Each structure stands twice: as C-alpha cells, then as structure tokens.
Amino acid sequence: MSTNINIDVGYVAQLARLELDEPTRNRLQHDLESILGYIEQLNELDVTGIEPTAHAALLSNIWRDDVDGTSYERDVMLKNAPAVIDGELVNVPKILPGEEMS
Amino acid sequence: MSIDVKSLTIAGAAALLSEGKISAVGLCQAYLDRVAAVDGKVKAFLKCDGERILAQAAASDSRRAAGKPLSEYDGIPIGIKDCIVSEGESCSCSSKILEPVVSPYDSTVVARLKAKGFIPMGRLNMDEFAMGSSTENSAFQKTCNPWDIDRVPGGSSGGSAASVAACEVPASLGSDTGGSIRQPAAFCGVVGLKPTYGRVSRFGLIAFASSLDQIGPLTRDVLDSAIIMDTIGGHDARDCTSLPDACGGFADAVITSRGGDLKGVKIGLPKEYFESDSSDGVKNGVQSAIDTMKKLGAEFVEVSLPHTKYAVATYYIIATAEASANLARFDGIRYGARDNSAEDLLDTYFKTRGKGFGDEVKRRIILGTYVLSSGYYDAFYLRAQKVRTLIRRDFENAFKQCDLILTPVTPTTAFKFGEKKDPLQMYLADIYTIALNLSGNCGISVPASLEEESGMPVGVQFIAPAMAEEKLFTSAAIFEANRAEKDLTATL
Image 1 (spheres, one colour):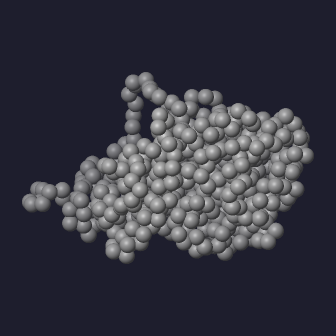
Image 2 (cartoon, helix red, strand yellow; image 1 turned 180 degrees about the horizontal axis):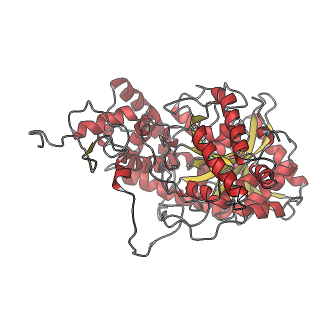
Image 3 (cartoon, helix red, strand yellow; image 1 turned 180 degrees about the vertical axis):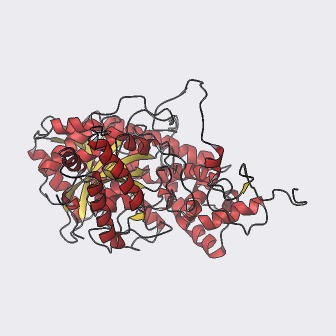
C-alpha cells in the first residue's frame, strides 16, 4: 500500500458519474484525504498468506431448480420509470450526438 | 378498554387482542393518535397513511371475528425503515433520488410479517441509504431523540428506534450494516438485534453493502425481539446468501427461561473494548450490567479481540466499495428522479446523481470507487478483505473461551445535533458495533441504565457466535428482568 495519500476527487467523481460543484469537491477532497490517512493504518499489519473474506455467509454455489414462473407485469415495473414510450419502453435520453431518433 | 400505548408490547397487545379486550382498529387508532400527538416533535415518520392502516386493521378484526386470525399477532402494527420495501408504499431511503418511487412488491420480511397479520405502519426516517450514525443525513428531516429532543436518535435506523422509544409503534424493523440497529437502540433506550448474517432475507432491502447488511427488529423488550425474529427469520430462495438452517422458537425459549439465572454462562469481556475511551456514563452502565449478571451467577473472563483497532478502517473500505457498486444503479433511467436539464445520456447520469445524492453518500461512493480503482484495488480492497479474515478469526478464538461477549454499544450516550461535524469522528463512534458486521456474528443491544448527568439511556451489547441467537435472547432476557433500572420509558 502506498504511504502517499494521492486522491483526485474530481477524477474519481468522473468515474463514479457524480457531478460536484466546486465547494463540494473541495470539501470532499479534504474529507477523503483525512479518511484515507486514517485507513492507511492497515499497512501496519502483515497479511501475507491470509485468505480474503468476501462474505460473512460462508456459502458457495447456491443453486435453484430451473423452473419457469411469472415475473412482475411490465406496466407495474414501468410505473417508476421517469419517462416511458407507449407504456412499454423506458425512454432514454440521447446517447450519441447527431440526428434525433424518429 | 382504553389503550395505553406507553405500557404496551407486542406480547401484551397479542394477549389483549386474543382476550377480545381490544380490537385491531382500536389498537392501530391508539398508535395513530400517538403519532399525531408526538411525531411533530420526534419526526420519526416520513409517511404514515392512517386510512390504509385502519383498513388493514378492520380486515384483521373480521378475520378474528370469524375465528380465523392469521396468528396471535394479527392486527398489531409495526414500523418499517424506509429502505425495506412494502408493496404500494414509497421507499425513498431518505434520498431525493428515490423520492418518487413506489414499491411494486413486498420485501420478504414484510411479506412474512403480513402473513402473520402484522400491519406495516408508515415509513421510518433514516440516514440517506443507511449511511450515517445520527439520522442527520436524511434528505428530508431530522429525527429527534424522544429522551431529549436536542439530541440525535442515532442512526442509521434513527426513525425506527425513535418511533419505538416514543411509543408510536410497538416495534419496528431496521437494518444494520455497521451498527445501524444496535447504536440507535442504545441511544433511544430500546432493544435492537442484528441477527447472524444470512439469517434474515435481504430480498427487498435496498442494498447499501450487501456482504454486511442485515435486517433486524427494534422493540421495547427482548421477548418482542424474539417474536419478530421468529416471524422474519429463516431461509428464502430469493436471497442467495440466505442460510438454509431452521430459524425460530426464540420466543418460546425466552418464555421458558423466565425466572432463570445465568449460572454456567461464561461471558467474555474483550479487553480492547474496555481500553478505549468511553464516557463515564457508558462505563458505569456496562459495569452495572456486569454486576447484575455476576449476581445471577454468570462467570466473566477477559478475552482479546486483537484486531479491534483496525475494524473501522476495514469496514470503511469494504462497505464503501460495495456501496459504490450497489448505488451505481441509481442513474435516473429506470426508476427514481431524473434530471431533465441534461444534454445527453452521460450528462443525465452526472446531473441526476449529483443532485439526487447528499454529501455523505457522495463521500462514500467516491471512497468506494477509489479503493476499487485500478492500481488501488490490491492495496486497499484486497488488504481490507484479508484483515476481515483476521477480525473474523478474533471472534472465533474468543468464543473458544466463552459463550457470549459483553461490550458497550457506543462510546457515549446520544450526542447533540451538529456535534459531530467531521465525518471521520462520526465513523470512529461505530467502533464497538462494526466488527460484528465484518465477522457475521449476531449481537443485541439492550438498555442497561440511565446516565446520571444527562438522563440518557446506556445500552450494553451481547455478542454470540454465528447462529447462536437463542443463547443471545435468553441471556439478554434474564439480564433485562433483573437490571437495576426498571423504568426505561422516555417521557416526551
């Protein structure tokens, strides 16, 4: 683990698809440096040969029978969509620049 | 008969209902009246639809009149934290980004409660996406501690704890990712259980950190906690981390243990939890609990959980990493609020998420994204997972020497609004609760005493090995029946 705290909150926010105004970015930059400074203490530990724990439930390979069943109705699930086309499709904003879809 | 909600528990209400002394409509109306009277001060509820609740209560009374109640609990209301979905009700997680969403289905826990006739009552306030320890991070309102409305109720299940402490509901459901049931339970003087990871289905729990999240009850006493656990626990095919083992009989075990003592019970006191700084009120509360249990015949031994000091750092890597992935789905496309001022799809993501999430959620998404990003994954995330193994082993080793572990729940009693401004200071206050979520053990917070200076409640935490809820419940109930402080009802 690097001992130099090196985080660019503006860049990470881009990765996380978060728009931040400048005061928020500055505030979070300060907070994150302080939090990462604290987290660095994990460097003190020797973890050579220790298996990682990904999950508290020590289960693996959970299978279910492959039986078909009914799922939720489309109109019910689309009720929460912010914009819908003809009651059957989620309306998504323009993805590529250029002509409008007809 | 007139109904005094201040003295009612689930078990008590069930007895009155079965004796025909009260009706479900009367019971729910009494709680709705209480909400109308005190929630202006407490602000535990985001929503509470009285008409809907009374309609369900009337249906319950009809079932009972026909001799076909769904269970002895048919007609008893229960509050639900806003991250646990209930069909036809909002589920905002106290976040603007999910404010318009209405759940099309029931979570497994709500479905199981309904199957026994419990009536979901209202949507309870929380820290946004369960990220916080004071409920100050709700996008909508600040919930107050019923013991002192200048103080926080704790968090993130602050609405769940405050509503029970204020007798607005007999019990509620919360969720616990790093202490979010046990800490507010301690701050508000109620009982809060974090079950063993995998005991309670997470289907319909809006995910914060999937490997740590667990739903559990907040109640006025240990018996009620066992009753709710009997109802909501057990395997669910819709949650692939759900444990296959049988889960139930806890209420019967508590009733059978009544009048018993703690002879033969070995309780570990982890030295690391007693070396760190706790307030005098907390220390005295824990000491009084130890004294009470010694008189009941319990044997105390010192144990060690040597990696305790690394638990907070480990947790904030793992929990935020999982959160950054879980919260990626909130993008304004399929559900929730969408910012319509955006130019294109990418801009829609940026603006929707930038406006929809509060500061603490952004902070954690950024931390989680960072620790998972290329070049940092091994240094932070993988290392934290390895330390998680060490923390889990600490508990396994400690439980070779004892049946239960007893600790404080929080370093202090409930603090005042705005007192903890620095996020890291807020995180460090989770030190006593957080390791259990990493290890998966179960734990219960039980009120022990009142702090002399402030009059605020102090809780103690009983910790048991994974799957040992029965031991947890029976020992906690025996302590509860014998604790020095008898009256732990907030005077609002």
